[in-house]
Image (cartoon, rainbow, N blue to C red; front, side, top):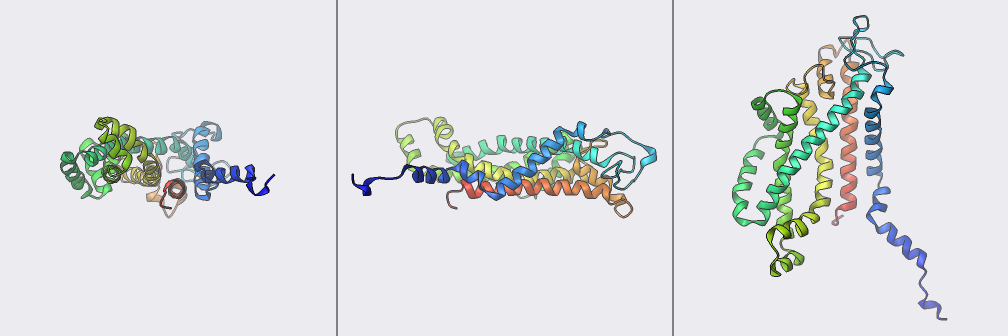
Length: 290
């Protein structure tokens, strides 16, 4: 038997496993770190009623502005409400509403980008509209929309989603212009495939990885925007324990009771950092140019 023709099977299989996307995801430190932080946040939010003996709106006149202690681990606010309870219940508000806002941006921005990139006749009017929206800073545009719709967490969610939508439209439009030049799309056009089928079956699937990476990075901005608008008083209204509103409630006591604002800011920072780590890690894994 010729030994030179024998190819060991195990090393070949191992090499293939290391080249796979699941293997790269599981061995990417940024993805692991971001996922662990988010998992901890989600578990804390789900178990909030179990982990805290106080309700998020439960007040106590005898416990106003208490610092961290054994009874109140993160202290209390100006109404004697337990800061830890309000922060854990705030996970159930800040993260889900940020996801709703991002979904709104995706379902409105992606179709606009697909139409503008694929149909030349729609490109100019749709992109000029996006240019007008992008001429305003994202936060300013959100404030204008909230001023029109009125304050409230739901309206802030819509405002931030619409403010994020132009970025998705331009991202998708640029990708579609590139994909249209690919041989598999030109072959489908030559074969007489309908435009809708080409967009949904050939172009959109090739945008998934780009959208996933961008959404993870954009999620950090959405959380910051919703928290900022709530801090300004036009988002979540009292006594809703949204993180930005919690930071705002402690701004008048920043010297005498800094814990009221400090702990919510730490939670915001940790969550934003987690999504940034996920986005960076997924970009390293899914971007073929890297």
